[in-house]
Length: 234
View (cartoon, rainbow, N blue to C red):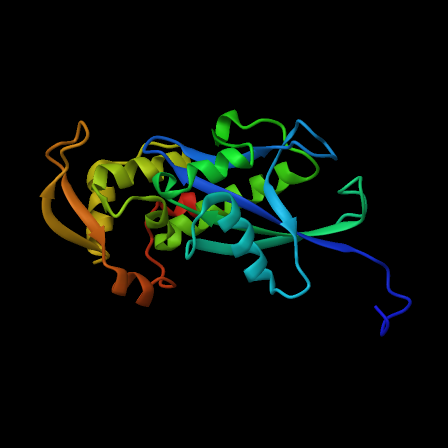
């Protein structure tokens, strides 16, 4: 601060919105705070940026501490900086949202942070402006999932088209036509038929697919048109 003696002290926080899919519902990973301010209330997982790290590194650190996962889908969403957003001290928050496979996370790490997976419709009241952050992230997830194949980040390595359809129905909270959805997905060339059938669910005759990782990375930013046009309004 010696070079900027007149600058005010403002803390820079990172808040992470973590989405998962349990095969039926989209869920949020939220923590019940055991510290002040707002002890005993629900919030997003967050922390302060260290002086020696970039924003993306700070987000990766926070996400790893909570989930035990690295190299997951993370996207910077927005910055929140209203003067009185944090009653303890002037704090600006940079928000990231992440998509993870629920079965892969470190359950012990989640328990140690007093965190729980909660469905979107059953989420509790959140502290500060965290509810605004979540609402923004949900709308962004809907927009991105319609145009880009980010939904695959929420699925296990092997999946069926009915499982993928359930995921998109959970994201948009609408029923989808099975034939049209299947046709659109198969036309992308993103799916590799493993030649196996699903033996762990009611859809035992459904073919198991896996994601073509090379095509996924090469074509991620292409516009795939997974959903009807009416669903792509943010």
